Amino acid sequence: MNDVDKLIEILNTVCPDVDFEAETNLVEDGILTSLDIVMIVSELMAAYDVRLDIDDLVPENFENAGTIYELIQKAKGN
Amino acid sequence: MIRPVSYEEAAALLPDFMRPGLKTNLADFTALKRDELRILERENGLFLLRRRESWWLLNFLMTGGPVPALPGRVVTELVSGPRESEAALTGLFEEAGFRTVLTRVRLTRPPSAPPADAPAPPVSPAGPEELEEVMALLRACFEPLTGCLPGREALMEDLTGGRVLAVREAEGIAGLLRYSAAGRRAEIRQLAVRRERRCRGLAGALTASFLARNAAARCAVWTGSDNGAALAVYRKKGFIEDGYRSSVMMKG
Image 1 (cartoon, chains in turn brown, yellow):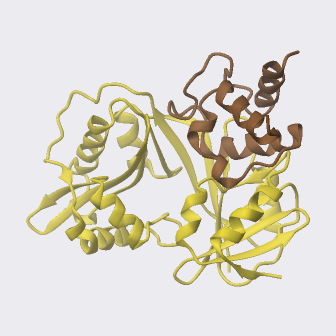
Image 2 (image 1 turned 135 degrees about the horizontal axis):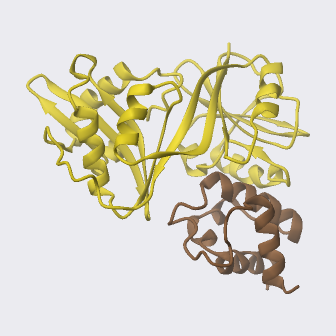
Image 3 (image 1 turned 135 degrees about the vertical axis):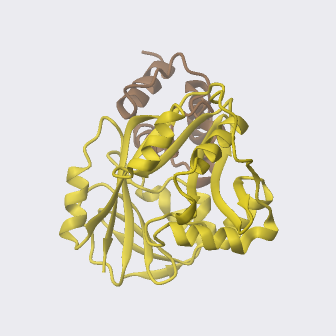
């Protein structure tokens, strides 16, 4: 399982009815709500042992699996 | 111990309480900047009180019970999605003295052309100079404790941005619709029609105008689950219930 597959598995535990592999505008298209983002961040911080700040919870960081992956990589210092 | 807290300090603390299995009703973090805040930190979560006129609005980030004892009149809203049960969370708040005073459902409408029927009577944006009149109509139509009414500053921003639509008659504003919009999403925040002007198509005209201005957006609205008149208007305009619901709870 590669890094993106692992990420999608985590995302699916929070939002099982969202197709994170296909959707590219999750927030702009109204698929993810602000509350979903808070739930996702809570799971990601624990799964990757990183800390995200309130300033990271902007819609553009959560539009698709790719932008979320980039956010995690940035938080890990990669 | 409940203590005053600045937005900056609260923002720095919040990530510490974002843990797996989180239950929260806090999504719009930037809205906290406008509020006088009190905070209570507990092992099971963080409880944030936002001052309103004579009560406190409660946001929380918690991973389990109990809900602590909170002084004074406190209002909170528990939101649940189609795959969730709110019963357990509601029970925790009931044990802390809260009772449900209102239940809401969310209706959504995918991006699509607005209904063919033209808005009539005419609808146009209200301006900043109508702040007092708009505020008065909102207060006349919504319960201050549960109506999610905007403060003056937020309402002025909406008026300046053209996000308050109004129907005007000889006596002034007879009905209005306030909304938010971001990207391809738009949400009706309040739809208010003066009591004596109801059942004349104003709500439908305001909703149609909102949809015409946001035809490319996925539109949403929260309304009382027993508000038959509002549900009928929204359903007629193509909104359908999407399974999201909320309970407004209050103590004190």
